[in-house]
Image (cartoon, rainbow, N blue to C red; front, top):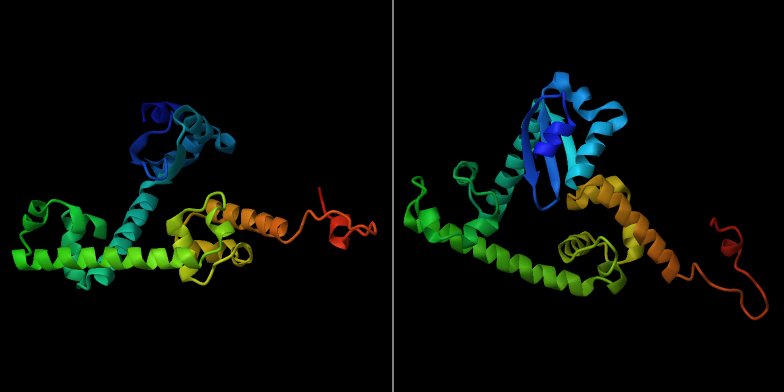
Amino acid sequence: AQFVVGALEPAKVRSIVMLEETHTMEVVVDEDNLAIAIGRAGQNVRLASELTGWQINIMTEAAAAQKRDEEVAKIRADFMDSLDIDEAAADVLIGEGFSSVEEIAYVPEKELYAIEAFDRETVDELRQRARNKLLADAITREENLRKADEPLLSLEGMDNDLASQLVGHGVKTLDDLGELATDDLVEMTGIDEERASSLIMKAGEGSATANGGDRAPDESGFVPKEMVFRRE
């Protein structure tokens, strides 16, 4: 983190949040320092990224607050849907530091029993609902993966969780994926725009190859029209 602070000088860094899962740092600066932190043509951000090996996202405090609000809203909705609880109960869990159904299902019981707003019976019921939800999701995931074409599952950048999501939306083949718009894929799965665009492009390339995009002339010497005009 110190490399990032140095690379962005003279901008003053308010805070840095490190997201291990995506190998990303969210760097918060004052709005007056935003342009300084980014640097001319983004040179400061590139330097910080090169020094750390992490993707660097520069944002203002207002943007960071909005992002946190959106994340909390998403967690709240997930708790309400997955555990069949109301907003007040979901907010209690969030206020106690819980952010996923997995945590409710598998953290040590004493951490849940320590929540003053819930009695032991409520905690036990929430824990059971969380485990039932995860089991149902795992079964659905395996069923979806069996429906997906192998080329889709083996596509570079694809993982089983994402593939399961796609099948759940009717996307089972490379052709299906390649026909999606980037915005549709982002909305469908929640992945970032860069990854969505890359997957769609690779799906199109893989589909073209699988459908004979590299066919050679037949014995008569005929070359398919699309091969004659194909761009190199």
